[in-house]
Structures are given as structure tokens and as C-alpha cells.
Length: 436
Image 1 (cartoon, rainbow, N blue to C red):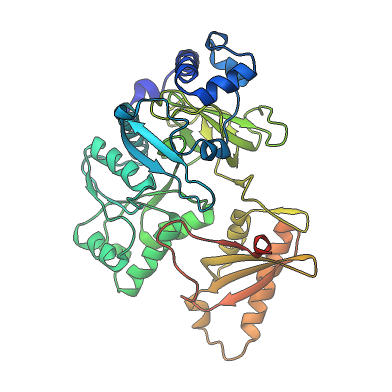
Image 2 (cartoon, rainbow, N blue to C red; image 1 turned 120 degrees about the horizontal axis):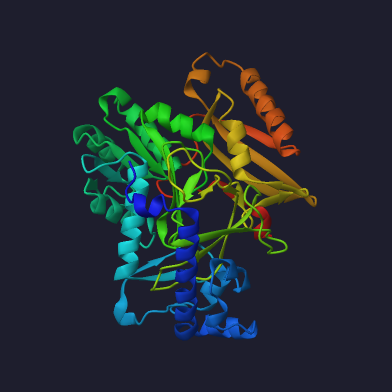
């Protein structure tokens, strides 16, 4: 099913015409209401009348997270405070948080776009939906919550924490759909198994997972252990929150709600646009947002826009999975390393559980990457009476990692349950070089 086929299946020419009209209106709006953007455009000798079609977007200035922090708290807000009905903030841990204000129109657009996502996953008003994202300043909880209610399904605002109670509710309420981070989905699966609940006792069939990168191997692990079909959901508070893009039943890239969020892929070094199919940095312009709209926001997420049509019938362009982040990328001995690369290797080794940590240190001016990963219980159950099997597994993992990363890593096999579990975004990487 498709929630809004008039928009989601819009012909390309009609879509670009709509995007052009909305872009022109947006530029005029921010020029007259946001001094930051007016100054930026004047420095480029631009006026609102210079932006007439969607192709003119390349004339506009970029916006960065630092711009949002420099204008903390309300410097980029375009609507008067009397029209702001909600404020969210980013989950960053350095500098000022990113404050984002939403008007009632923004909330309505958010709910509409979330309903598109949920319908693409096969959710209907007959479902009981557990929202296990955080309900605080983070956009995940309330973002999905409003979409579920707009769709007409039953929402259970479980939020994070209380995982044993959550597991009980999954069984007792017959919950059919779940939204959370992929790492929490695995933690939930682990607790369910520890409580002696089998996936056959659950009615789960749909999972909406996002807020952190995950791999296809991780998807398969979640699906197998929870007995559902897992879909990717993508969003960021600076643009809207969850709903910016979503997988359909084809699970071949995530459709971007590009009547509201216009995407570009740029080379992060030259800032020049890249054609579809090329990997680069994802950039978004909020075409309809009124509270705090942004022009050409550099997400730092690395991916590509996929060419070709999707068999589902939606004409919205699809984005690939996130390959990493241009600012979170680890450079170790001159090699670019993304946690998703390490995860893909680890989940491809049967003896390794999907719980791992990356630790980067600098010793004698040399970068050292340590990969800690838990062994699966069934592997240890075979009988580990010496260190030989553990040592052999560490060598196996190290060899696989070197073949993918092109650098050596120190591998430490950990006992099941020994690494910390996270109910929100998982803290996978510790870079001790930044502490020196």
C-alpha cells in the first residue's frame, strides 16, 4: 500500500516543478525572516528573485552544524516564537546543542511523512505499535508516535528503559510493530531470550530501525531473532526527525520525501554536486518547513542517490544506506575506517555475536585499533577448556578485518554479556587520541 500516491508517485516533471515553486517561496521566506541567510545571500550577490527553479539550488549557500550552534538558540528560527509549538534538540555531546523549533504546520508535515514511512512497511490501523525511541528532546519518540496516531494504529509509548517490562508487553499486548535503534532491538531480543520467551509467542512482524548506522548482516540478525521484517528509517533533527526517508517492501534503498526535503550529493572536498550513483555527502534543503527551515544543510552522512525506478511505484528518489560520516570517519595510519565496515565483517563470522566496540589509541606515535567483540554463547558451549579456541578466533577475525580495512587491528574476544548494552544510540567508538 501507498499512503499518499498522488505525491509519492508524482511524475518527475511535475515533481520538479513543485520543488522549484517551493524552493522559490522558501528562499524568499528565509531572506526576509532569517538575518543569517539574508547576509549569506547578500555576500553571494543573490536575491530571492534569482531562485526560480529547483536547478537554481546550486547558487545557494550551504548550512553546517556549526552555523546552527553559532546561532544558538533561536538565531535561525524563521517563525515568530508565538507560532512555535514544540522544540527539539540534537543529541550531540560537544558545544551548544542544536535547537529546532516546529510550527503546527511542521508537525502536520512530519506526521504525514511518518505515515508514508509506516504504510510502506505494511503498517495499518489494525496494528499495535511499540515506540521504543526516547521521548525527550530527541526527535525519535514523538516523531514516530505522531505518525502512528495519524495512521490510526494503536501506539504504545514504551520509550527506552524497562526492557524486561517491554518484553512482557510485547507478548501480553500482542504488539505487532516496533520502532527503536537496531542496537536496542538486539538488546531486546537478548532479554526476551533470557526471559524464556520465544519469538513464536510474539506477534511482531514489522520493525522500523534507525538513528544509528546498521548493516545488512545486522538486519538479518534482528529479523531472525525477533521474527519480524526490519526496515530502515532515516531522519535528523535539523531537517525534521524520523521520516526524511524510508524503505519500501523492496528494501532496495530508502525513498526520500523529496516534496518536502530536497536531496543533493556533493563531494565533501570540492562541495561540487555529484551525479546519481556516486558516493558523497548528503545535503538537504527543507522545502516546506516554517519553524526553522534550512538551506543546503550538510548532514555529513556519506551515501549515494540511486538511479532507476523502484518496482513499488513510488517516484521519490532512493538513497543508499549510510556508508559512514565524513566527520565521524576514523583515519587510522592514513586509512579511512568506518564502524559499519567493521560491523559487516564481525556479523559475517558465525562465532561472533553482534556486540562490539572499537577503541583507537596512539602509542609511540602509531595509531592502534582495538576491536572488542563478544563470542556467541553456542560457540563457547562447545567447550573452551584452553585459550586455544579463543586465540584462533581472534586470529580469524583479525585476518578478515585486515582484508577489508587494509590495516591490522588488535582483536579481543569477550565473554557473552560482558560489553555494555545501550537502550539509546550505541556508543561504539572510543577514540583516545582526542584525549591527549
